[in-house]
Every structure is written in C-alpha cells, then in structure tokens.
Length: 605
Image (tube, rainbow, N blue to C red; front, side, top):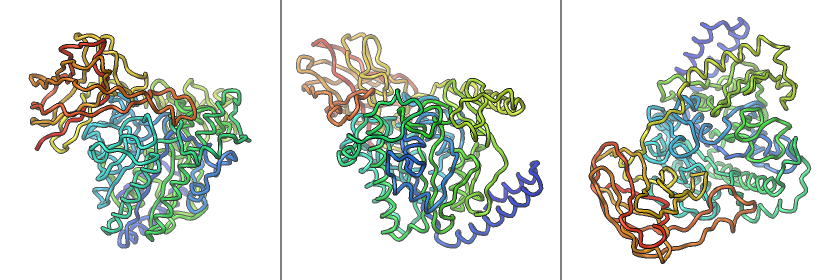
C-alpha cells in the first residue's frame, strides 16, 4: 500500500501530462483497493523461474518452430506476456538485479567468478523482502551471487537452499551439490532434481499453511551441453527450419542440444504447474518466467543483433511471462519496456508487502500496469544495459548502442541502420543518461573484499579452488574457474592462497577434497591462517579419471571434472580477523603434490 501511495505522490510531483496523470492516479487507487482486499484474503504464493543462457528466441510462444514449449507458452496464454523485457548480458549481474532491484554495478557485482559475483552485504534481496512479509523462502538451483555465508543464499533471505553456488557446474547428472551449506549428492539430472526439491518445499509450505516464495534458477541451457536422452533424441537428427541471421556461424549440434535442454525446462515447468494445481493453489500463485541473458550460441533469435555477452538487443532481451489467475487478465501482451530490476518492487507490491531495502531502487513497480486491464502505456523511461566496457541505453523506441550508434528498434530490431543524425536530440538524451550512469558507478569493479570464513551465524564454509590463487607454476584446470581444480604443484615454494576474513573465533573441523597419483603419496602439508597451523599428510592415493565428457553432446569449453576424495584433516583453532589462508607443502616426495578441489570448514559449537 505504501509503495502505491508514494508512487502516486511522485507522479503528481513530476511533469506527467494531465490525462496520463489522471489515468495513473486512478489505476494506483484501483490497485490499492485490490491489494487491500487481497491482504485481508489469502496472500498469493510466488514461483519464479530463471533459466540460464536461454535467450528470447528459445520459446515457441515467440515464434520458434524449431522447438515446442507448450507449458511455458501456457503462462502467456493464461497470463501476461511482456513484449520488451531486458536483463543483463551475462549470468550473475542479472541474478543480482533481480534479487536487489538495483543495477548490478551498484551492488558490488563486477564478474562471474572468483568473488566478483558477490552482492555487497548491505544489499537487501527480494527474499529478505518476502521473509519479512511472512513468507517461507526457498531457492533451488544455480545461485551465482556468492558462496561463503553471508553471501550464501541462506544469508540473503532464503530459508532453504538446494543447488550449487558457482557460475556453472561440470556435470549435470547426480553431481555434488549442497543443501543449506552441507555437501550432498544430487539425484538424477540436476534440473529435474531442483524441481523435485522445489515441489517438496511447496508441499511443506502448504502443510504449514504459510505462503511461499520459491525461486528456481535453473542452470540450463548453459554448457556443458548435457540433457537426458529422452530430450536429446528428439533433436539429434532434427532438421531445423529457422536459423540465425548469420547461419554460417551456427553449430548445429550445439543448437540442437540447447533446444533439447529448453524442452526439458518446459517439462519441468509443467511439473510445477501441475503441482500447484494438485495443491489447489494455482489460482492464487504468481508464476514468473524469464532468462538471464541472450542465447549462449548462434541460433534463431528473431533477427536481433547480439547474443550472450552483448548489450545489443539480442544479448539482453528476455522472455517475461507472468501468470496469476486470480488477478491478471489472461492472454494480455504488455508493450511498455521493462527491466529485470522491476521484478523485486513489482512482486512485493502485488503481494502487498514492503520492499526490505532502504536503498533507492533502479526498478519500478509494474503492479498498476499488470492489474489495470485497460492500461497499455507508461511514461517513457531509460533502461541501462551494462557489462564491463559495454553500456547500452534503451527507451521505448530507441537503443543507443555501446559504440554510440542510435537504432530505432521498433522498425529495425536487427540494429542495421544508425539514425543518430536523424534523431540528434534522442541520441544526445540517451548519451547523457549513459554518461551519468557511468559516473554514478565509477570504480564499480574495484574489489578488496576478502573471502569470509566462519561467520558466527552459520556453521559451514566452502573454500573452493575457484576462489583460490595458486602461486608459482600451479595451474588451474580451465580458464573458466567456477568448476575448476588446481594441479601441477611441483615445489615447496608454491602454495594455494585465499585473502580471507574469519568472522568468529573458534575451533573448526576441516575436510579436504583432493586427488593424488600413487607415486605422489606421502607429502607433508599445512593449512595456515595467522598463527594457526593444521599439519596433515596425504597417505592414500586417489587418481580418478577426468569425466563429464560421457554426457556431453558438444565438446565443452569448461573444465572436465573428477570424483575427488574427501578426507578429514582434523580441527584448527582460528582467531577472528583478516589474513591469508593458505595451504603450504613442507615436502613433495613425487613429481607433484595433490590436486586440490575444495576445503570444507565446519565451526564446532
């Protein structure tokens, strides 16, 4: 309610033309009445699907005849489809913008791994908002916004978390995952597994008679390109009718597998929709579906320019489908542009709860636009799409590209004609917004935050190779660090290090995940932090083969994985404070030390 009233005041104070002002005021009062009534009734549940690397064109509802996504399409038929909805160019920034309602550069996210994917700890998330509003909150899938608590999902408002916190994973079939910080083994294909866990969460929430906020950030069709045979067999020999604007750049196997993975997503979305119906809560559950960036390969995408990593239209345009049978008109298409930053304030407003953050949001509430069936326009706005050195600005009609060219998207979705000279005033206005934004976030990628260990409110801390630095000739298994390990440790002068901060003094049980060839067994090592030392030896060989390729349908660019062995090293007494956590070698009897995957620290209460 307070959000709507404050928005009315804002719009009255701004220079909105009288007819629009009257319409908006009437709409907001209508929305207030609807929400006042819903507040007295049962509060709606919320289910949010976020897919990884899917792209706008990977849905049949958008005209792609290469694929069939009937259950996702049903959200548009039974709810609202946004015509122009924008996210970021890559994964973790989009997740941060959804969670906070703020541009990722404001929240500390500047990279997709090694700590740069973390949101600053003074940010409040949509899960904080819904938990404060009395909701059970759960996330199931790929987090990608920090691993060590309180960057961990359990520290960002989620009561339950099941999945993996890295940016990508090396194997999608029964992989190592975590549940609320504790390491577990997944069961079956990971997206199916995440869906199973999310449905159990929904069932438990209904049993407790509490509304729930369920976030399902799926990790497909991000590579490695793996999918159950049932879905791959539909596509492995399929002739594709639609192609990218540059068909000679397509990798047919990659395209087919990506589409097969999207059909698996559709099947899982259908399972959730069926579960909501089974629980008799589908009419009063808000279901949201979107993806995190453009497609992760060259394939049909509606003739738009750009793909994942680009701030052109094709790199940042995403599906957005919202269904709420109790309140939203079925089959409606929304034409005003919208941003992923809008989802936090919008969903809070639809559920009648206040946004937890006291910071200024970049997103706006679209609740009035959704609730008023007659409303089809909004005052023009400018949406920023930014990633590293790329920054593009979109208003309702135009996009100012990264290189300063202006495109009239309504008539030139492919961004082929620069109309800067035809519309100099528009180009100047959008450039001024771009320059102002970049000035606002200056220094956004300067990061001195340590990796946090042993927070007083949490028992578990994962310290992976992903976040480590290996000195000397130590190598990483792949340039993409998220699911990597360290090897080629050949000298006692070399070490594995993390700049860290211990949050709570105390005793910690330490486990190590390693691999070691028989000829390299017997080395002597120490885990050190400040004055604390935990000596250990590798006494047992464990030399598993690389794997993951047995499930790949396309040769991957990420690291292959191993089944690392987990051993307990003992306990160590750590003092709160900052310093360098490191593993050092006192002796290496063979050609190299062990291969390193992960440290797991558990605080002993």
